[in-house]
Length: 133
Image 1 (spheres, one colour):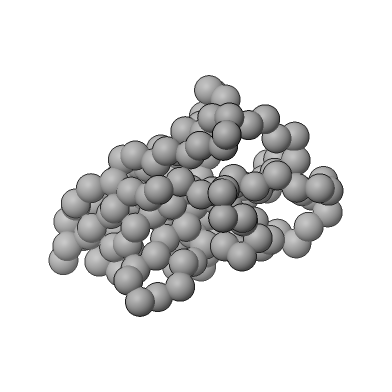
Image 2 (cartoon, rainbow, N blue to C red):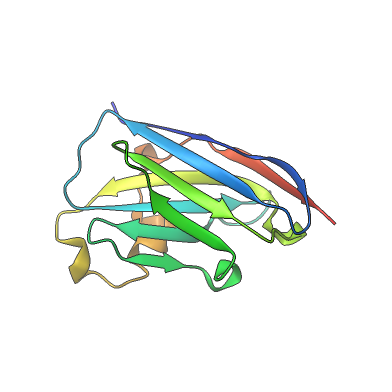
């Protein structure tokens, strides 16, 4: 059974930093998308950063230059380094991983950044990030 667990959220002041971690278990994917997403109450979930099995990385415009997505040395471990945090970054952050039926490099670069391309069972339970001004 696929399981994803996020950690690292918390409360910081504007300009601060946090590093989120996502540890997955119960799967081995050869072609896949992995993404970090966030959601605030009353709004749709949005893609923040993604990477795929061809090592392509994509960021939402709102976080470019401030957030860095990476894959850890341990299997199925991912990180999101968030620097220069702003109050508008306040949200619940989720990681998600989905297997692909084709080579990830054949897809548009923003494919992995779209929440709709992940299935119901592909998500972690989230970690909350609060940034105060």
